[in-house]
Length: 267
Image 1 (cartoon, one colour):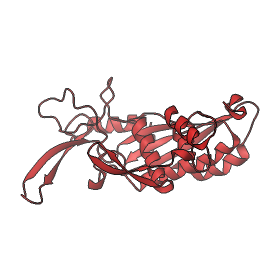
Image 2 (cartoon, rainbow, N blue to C red):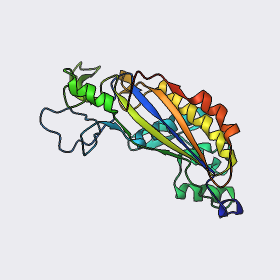
Image 3 (tube, rainbow, N blue to C red):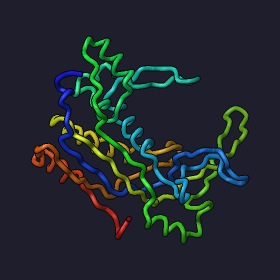
Image 4 (cartoon, rainbow, N blue to C red):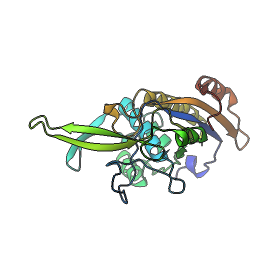
Protein backbone atom coordinates (compact mmCIF):
# COMPACT_ATOMS: atom_id res chain seq x y z
CA UNK A 1 0.00 0.00 0.00
CA UNK A 2 1.37 3.42 -0.89
CA UNK A 3 1.68 6.42 1.35
CA UNK A 4 -1.39 7.88 -0.34
CA UNK A 5 -3.65 4.95 0.50
CA UNK A 6 -2.12 4.13 3.90
CA UNK A 7 -3.80 7.27 5.30
CA UNK A 8 -7.02 6.90 3.33
CA UNK A 9 -9.97 8.69 4.93
CA UNK A 10 -13.47 9.29 3.71
CA UNK A 11 -13.94 12.99 3.01
CA UNK A 12 -17.60 13.05 2.12
CA UNK A 13 -20.76 11.29 1.02
CA UNK A 14 -23.28 12.39 -1.58
CA UNK A 15 -26.61 10.54 -1.62
CA UNK A 16 -28.25 10.79 -5.04
CA UNK A 17 -31.92 9.81 -5.04
CA UNK A 18 -35.19 10.36 -6.79
CA UNK A 19 -37.76 8.73 -9.05
CA UNK A 20 -37.17 6.72 -12.21
CA UNK A 21 -40.11 6.27 -14.58
CA UNK A 22 -40.55 3.60 -17.24
CA UNK A 23 -41.60 5.40 -20.42
CA UNK A 24 -42.15 2.06 -22.18
CA UNK A 25 -42.66 -1.46 -20.83
CA UNK A 26 -39.74 -2.61 -18.68
CA UNK A 27 -38.40 -6.16 -18.57
CA UNK A 28 -35.62 -7.03 -16.13
CA UNK A 29 -35.56 -10.79 -15.93
CA UNK A 30 -36.01 -12.90 -12.85
CA UNK A 31 -35.60 -16.61 -12.21
CA UNK A 32 -37.46 -19.11 -14.36
CA UNK A 33 -37.62 -21.58 -11.47
CA UNK A 34 -41.12 -22.30 -10.26
CA UNK A 35 -43.05 -20.62 -13.07
CA UNK A 36 -46.61 -21.81 -13.08
CA UNK A 37 -48.38 -23.22 -16.12
CA UNK A 38 -49.85 -20.31 -18.03
CA UNK A 39 -47.14 -17.92 -16.92
CA UNK A 40 -44.82 -15.89 -19.14
CA UNK A 41 -41.82 -17.46 -20.84
CA UNK A 42 -39.62 -14.63 -19.56
CA UNK A 43 -40.58 -13.28 -16.13
CA UNK A 44 -39.54 -10.10 -14.34
CA UNK A 45 -37.58 -10.01 -11.11
CA UNK A 46 -39.75 -9.50 -8.01
CA UNK A 47 -39.30 -8.84 -4.32
CA UNK A 48 -39.52 -12.16 -2.50
CA UNK A 49 -41.62 -10.71 0.34
CA UNK A 50 -44.35 -8.69 -1.38
CA UNK A 51 -44.06 -9.84 -5.00
CA UNK A 52 -43.53 -6.32 -6.32
CA UNK A 53 -41.29 -5.88 -9.37
CA UNK A 54 -38.16 -3.84 -8.70
CA UNK A 55 -35.02 -2.70 -10.49
CA UNK A 56 -31.93 -4.48 -9.12
CA UNK A 57 -29.07 -2.16 -8.25
CA UNK A 58 -26.76 -4.46 -10.18
CA UNK A 59 -28.80 -3.96 -13.36
CA UNK A 60 -28.86 -0.18 -13.05
CA UNK A 61 -25.19 0.09 -12.11
CA UNK A 62 -24.11 -2.29 -14.86
CA UNK A 63 -26.03 -0.34 -17.49
CA UNK A 64 -24.62 3.02 -16.36
CA UNK A 65 -21.12 1.59 -16.49
CA UNK A 66 -21.54 -0.04 -19.90
CA UNK A 67 -22.82 3.20 -21.43
CA UNK A 68 -19.76 5.10 -20.22
CA UNK A 69 -17.52 2.28 -21.44
CA UNK A 70 -18.94 2.70 -24.95
CA UNK A 71 -17.98 6.37 -24.91
CA UNK A 72 -14.62 6.33 -23.15
CA UNK A 73 -12.93 2.97 -23.67
CA UNK A 74 -11.65 1.12 -26.73
CA UNK A 75 -13.38 -2.15 -27.51
CA UNK A 76 -11.54 -5.44 -27.92
CA UNK A 77 -13.15 -8.31 -29.81
CA UNK A 78 -13.43 -11.14 -27.27
CA UNK A 79 -15.07 -14.54 -27.19
CA UNK A 80 -17.73 -15.03 -24.52
CA UNK A 81 -19.24 -18.50 -24.74
CA UNK A 82 -20.19 -19.01 -28.37
CA UNK A 83 -20.32 -15.30 -29.14
CA UNK A 84 -17.71 -12.76 -30.19
CA UNK A 85 -18.44 -9.34 -28.70
CA UNK A 86 -16.59 -6.11 -28.06
CA UNK A 87 -15.50 -5.67 -24.44
CA UNK A 88 -13.63 -2.72 -22.90
CA UNK A 89 -9.87 -3.22 -22.83
CA UNK A 90 -8.52 -0.55 -20.50
CA UNK A 91 -7.65 -2.16 -17.17
CA UNK A 92 -4.09 -0.88 -17.55
CA UNK A 93 -5.53 2.62 -17.11
CA UNK A 94 -6.48 1.82 -13.49
CA UNK A 95 -3.40 3.59 -12.13
CA UNK A 96 -4.35 6.77 -14.04
CA UNK A 97 -7.29 8.46 -12.25
CA UNK A 98 -8.22 10.35 -15.43
CA UNK A 99 -8.26 7.45 -17.88
CA UNK A 100 -9.23 4.82 -15.32
CA UNK A 101 -12.17 6.65 -13.76
CA UNK A 102 -14.56 3.81 -14.65
CA UNK A 103 -12.71 1.42 -12.36
CA UNK A 104 -12.56 3.88 -9.48
CA UNK A 105 -16.20 4.85 -9.87
CA UNK A 106 -17.78 1.44 -10.49
CA UNK A 107 -15.19 -1.00 -9.11
CA UNK A 108 -12.85 -3.69 -10.38
CA UNK A 109 -11.70 -7.08 -9.09
CA UNK A 110 -8.48 -7.26 -7.01
CA UNK A 111 -7.06 -9.79 -9.47
CA UNK A 112 -7.37 -7.34 -12.35
CA UNK A 113 -5.71 -4.60 -10.29
CA UNK A 114 -2.78 -6.85 -9.40
CA UNK A 115 -2.27 -7.83 -13.03
CA UNK A 116 -2.42 -4.21 -14.21
CA UNK A 117 0.01 -3.05 -11.51
CA UNK A 118 2.42 -5.84 -12.39
CA UNK A 119 2.42 -4.87 -16.07
CA UNK A 120 2.89 -1.19 -15.18
CA UNK A 121 5.63 -1.91 -12.65
CA UNK A 122 3.74 -0.06 -9.90
CA UNK A 123 2.44 -1.02 -6.48
CA UNK A 124 -0.90 -2.76 -6.04
CA UNK A 125 -3.41 -0.05 -5.03
CA UNK A 126 -6.90 -1.43 -4.44
CA UNK A 127 -8.95 1.66 -3.67
CA UNK A 128 -12.60 1.63 -2.52
CA UNK A 129 -15.31 1.71 -5.16
CA UNK A 130 -16.83 5.18 -5.09
CA UNK A 131 -20.39 4.46 -6.24
CA UNK A 132 -23.00 2.28 -4.53
CA UNK A 133 -26.27 1.68 -6.41
CA UNK A 134 -29.25 0.44 -4.38
CA UNK A 135 -32.14 -1.72 -5.54
CA UNK A 136 -34.98 0.52 -6.75
CA UNK A 137 -38.38 -0.52 -5.34
CA UNK A 138 -41.68 0.32 -6.99
CA UNK A 139 -43.26 3.47 -5.58
CA UNK A 140 -46.35 3.30 -3.40
CA UNK A 141 -48.22 5.44 -5.94
CA UNK A 142 -47.49 2.98 -8.75
CA UNK A 143 -48.39 -0.04 -6.64
CA UNK A 144 -51.76 1.44 -5.74
CA UNK A 145 -52.47 2.36 -9.37
CA UNK A 146 -51.66 -1.16 -10.56
CA UNK A 147 -53.75 -2.66 -7.75
CA UNK A 148 -56.74 -0.86 -9.27
CA UNK A 149 -55.84 -1.48 -12.91
CA UNK A 150 -58.04 -3.70 -15.07
CA UNK A 151 -55.35 -4.06 -17.73
CA UNK A 152 -52.67 -6.15 -16.03
CA UNK A 153 -52.23 -9.81 -16.95
CA UNK A 154 -50.27 -10.78 -13.84
CA UNK A 155 -49.88 -8.96 -10.50
CA UNK A 156 -48.41 -5.51 -11.33
CA UNK A 157 -47.32 -6.56 -14.83
CA UNK A 158 -48.54 -7.17 -18.35
CA UNK A 159 -47.62 -10.02 -20.69
CA UNK A 160 -46.67 -9.19 -24.25
CA UNK A 161 -46.33 -11.80 -26.97
CA UNK A 162 -43.29 -11.41 -29.19
CA UNK A 163 -42.79 -13.48 -32.33
CA UNK A 164 -39.46 -14.56 -33.77
CA UNK A 165 -39.71 -15.36 -37.49
CA UNK A 166 -37.22 -17.59 -39.29
CA UNK A 167 -36.30 -15.61 -42.42
CA UNK A 168 -35.64 -18.81 -44.40
CA UNK A 169 -38.57 -21.05 -43.44
CA UNK A 170 -40.97 -18.27 -42.34
CA UNK A 171 -41.71 -20.36 -39.26
CA UNK A 172 -42.98 -18.25 -36.35
CA UNK A 173 -41.91 -18.90 -32.76
CA UNK A 174 -44.05 -16.93 -30.31
CA UNK A 175 -42.97 -16.28 -26.74
CA UNK A 176 -44.57 -14.37 -23.91
CA UNK A 177 -42.57 -11.70 -22.11
CA UNK A 178 -43.63 -10.24 -18.79
CA UNK A 179 -42.99 -6.54 -18.36
CA UNK A 180 -43.80 -3.70 -16.00
CA UNK A 181 -46.23 -1.31 -17.74
CA UNK A 182 -45.17 2.06 -19.09
CA UNK A 183 -45.67 4.79 -16.49
CA UNK A 184 -44.50 2.68 -13.55
CA UNK A 185 -42.21 4.56 -11.18
CA UNK A 186 -39.39 3.39 -8.92
CA UNK A 187 -37.48 5.03 -6.07
CA UNK A 188 -33.76 4.95 -6.85
CA UNK A 189 -30.78 5.76 -4.65
CA UNK A 190 -27.04 5.91 -5.28
CA UNK A 191 -24.33 6.71 -2.74
CA UNK A 192 -21.16 8.41 -3.93
CA UNK A 193 -18.26 8.28 -1.46
CA UNK A 194 -15.33 10.70 -1.76
CA UNK A 195 -11.84 9.77 -0.58
CA UNK A 196 -9.79 12.40 -2.45
CA UNK A 197 -10.65 15.95 -3.46
CA UNK A 198 -10.10 14.88 -7.07
CA UNK A 199 -13.08 12.50 -6.76
CA UNK A 200 -15.42 15.47 -7.21
CA UNK A 201 -14.88 15.32 -10.96
CA UNK A 202 -16.58 11.89 -11.00
CA UNK A 203 -19.92 13.61 -10.32
CA UNK A 204 -20.06 14.87 -13.89
CA UNK A 205 -19.56 11.29 -15.11
CA UNK A 206 -22.51 10.10 -13.02
CA UNK A 207 -24.72 12.78 -14.54
CA UNK A 208 -23.50 11.86 -18.00
CA UNK A 209 -24.24 8.16 -17.45
CA UNK A 210 -27.77 8.90 -16.27
CA UNK A 211 -28.44 11.07 -19.32
CA UNK A 212 -26.98 8.44 -21.64
CA UNK A 213 -29.38 5.91 -20.13
CA UNK A 214 -32.37 8.12 -20.90
CA UNK A 215 -31.46 7.85 -24.58
CA UNK A 216 -30.77 4.11 -24.45
CA UNK A 217 -32.67 1.34 -22.66
CA UNK A 218 -32.70 -0.49 -19.34
CA UNK A 219 -33.29 -4.23 -19.13
CA UNK A 220 -34.00 -6.66 -21.93
CA UNK A 221 -35.65 -6.35 -25.35
CA UNK A 222 -34.47 -2.78 -25.80
CA UNK A 223 -34.29 -3.02 -29.59
CA UNK A 224 -38.00 -3.93 -29.55
CA UNK A 225 -38.95 -0.76 -27.72
CA UNK A 226 -38.73 -1.95 -24.13
CA UNK A 227 -36.83 -0.18 -21.37
CA UNK A 228 -37.01 3.53 -22.18
CA UNK A 229 -36.68 5.31 -18.83
CA UNK A 230 -36.32 8.82 -17.45
CA UNK A 231 -35.15 10.13 -14.09
CA UNK A 232 -38.17 12.38 -13.55
CA UNK A 233 -36.97 13.43 -10.10
CA UNK A 234 -33.39 13.56 -8.92
CA UNK A 235 -31.63 15.32 -6.09
CA UNK A 236 -28.55 15.09 -3.91
CA UNK A 237 -27.76 15.36 -0.19
CA UNK A 238 -24.17 16.17 0.74
CA UNK A 239 -22.31 15.40 3.96
CA UNK A 240 -18.63 16.16 4.67
CA UNK A 241 -16.29 14.40 7.10
CA UNK A 242 -12.91 15.04 8.73
CA UNK A 243 -13.22 18.81 8.69
CA UNK A 244 -13.36 19.25 4.91
CA UNK A 245 -15.94 21.17 2.92
CA UNK A 246 -16.18 21.23 -0.85
CA UNK A 247 -19.57 22.93 -1.11
CA UNK A 248 -18.22 25.55 -3.50
CA UNK A 249 -17.07 22.84 -5.91
CA UNK A 250 -20.23 20.71 -5.58
CA UNK A 251 -22.96 23.38 -5.53
CA UNK A 252 -22.74 24.16 -9.26
CA UNK A 253 -23.03 20.46 -10.12
CA UNK A 254 -25.92 20.00 -7.70
CA UNK A 255 -27.88 22.96 -9.10
CA UNK A 256 -27.56 21.65 -12.66
CA UNK A 257 -28.25 18.06 -11.60
CA UNK A 258 -31.45 18.45 -9.60
CA UNK A 259 -34.75 17.92 -11.43
CA UNK A 260 -38.40 17.44 -10.48
CA UNK A 261 -40.96 16.52 -13.13
CA UNK A 262 -43.23 14.53 -10.81
CA UNK A 263 -46.93 15.19 -10.43
CA UNK A 264 -47.91 14.92 -6.80
CA UNK A 265 -46.41 12.45 -4.36
CA UNK A 266 -44.46 9.60 -5.98
CA UNK A 267 -43.45 7.97 -2.70
